[in-house]
Image (tube, rainbow, N blue to C red):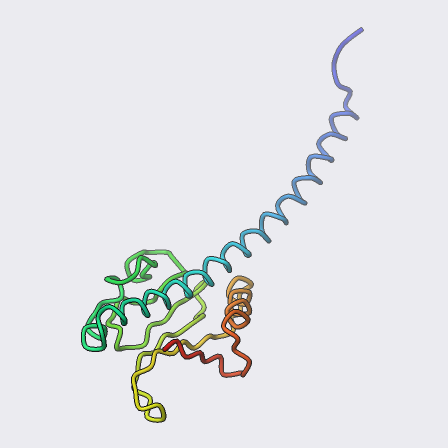
Length: 157
């Protein structure tokens, strides 16, 4: 009596492994999108907190003359080739600061003088994405920041 697998048993095993692999690959793809969206949402929130902290420590005059890279450890896309998520450029805080998620603009931080409020304000403009990760991050940010209007504008301070 031989102790070997028959051809039918081998084919049946390969088919089962193939079905299980196709299910696992789909689950991994969904988890990857969720992880990317969570990273984008967390990084924009972290960057907003770092801007507030820097402003409170340094005041207006020093705050506007700081490079973005001096207050955050979030990726600067001009410094990393091939990266698609992070802050687009290492400029001064007095200019617009753009954050991209999956190479789609997710948020813009703008530090400017508001004539209506008669003071400097930091606002974050949130944009609806087109990729699954950027769209999910947009919805989470909008919900967490209680942005109810269609402008997507949020006053940080």
